[in-house]
Image (cartoon, rainbow over all chains, first blue to last red):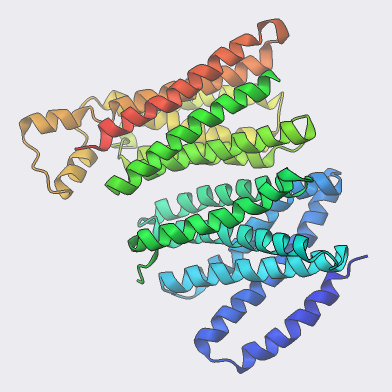
Length: 213
Length: 227
């Protein structure tokens, strides 16, 4: 039995205290981190519910349902922020990345409690793999949301399209990561390499990523 | 085995096309190339997911939400490409084309629903209707497209007589290509519903044609956007 609510409360409590004590800009980032963790918890509930509804076993659920639920849930805090407040592009992309980081952190903590923390090498690979995957997916949607589309209809439809890209990318990662041996290693390496490509692109094409309006 | 080879060939073609489209998008900063690149990339990812599932689990996914979502998203990007190129000049002028398109797509949708999921077929039908309607409207227009002319004038190029006539049919190849792609998709879906093993090779022939149609979108977009 994995008491993820209890783990969530333990991690969320100090974060909430810190959020109350912080200044505005730092507080915003920490709130997104907290929202990412909350999205992860809710995703686990929804995925379990859907798996039960369709009568799917745990492995099939993690390959076919979880990516869909997780990526959609991860987008919600950022969408809420965009619709309620009037953030700048930089604030939106920062928020999206912090949500992804919070999500990945909570997922890793749950993985540790379920599978133990003995094998450091494997945990390092998994930590970077999962972390990079969530950040890449978050960045993908954020770029679609704020940087690539200038018209509203393009922004809406394009974001749905890029969300589909993120979901499929996540699904591919889950398929590879659930294997043993070389396939699993490739699965963990792909997001890390994707992050590197993202960083290189950001360095060479700053006009796409750095507009602050 | 043959399904894996078919998927692998598709992946090679789509991956190659995606690289070309994204490279063009970066060098020209033209959004049409970016949308085309996304079309290839999303289709590629859907195929890759399907292929990995075949390789690692020896069968197709039981609940194919993810690959179908991916393929639907690729149609969405094609629709965005047509919309961005301002192929559809007027809703009212093309209402008859829309009605004819809907008769075809909804009819096919009802037929496919007897084999597969309702929701997935409905989403695909909506996207395909948009694609076919916009492509047919673009083909039927046959006159100067104000959007294309406006885009060209915004970019600074002066639209003289010959240029304007060139702008008339700039999107025509793109419309033909997308229409061809949609029709082959429909033919493939129908073949999977009606044909059994001895005649199933027709599906693979259509699959090759689909990849040809997808690859031909590159010269079509080049003609539509390059000035």
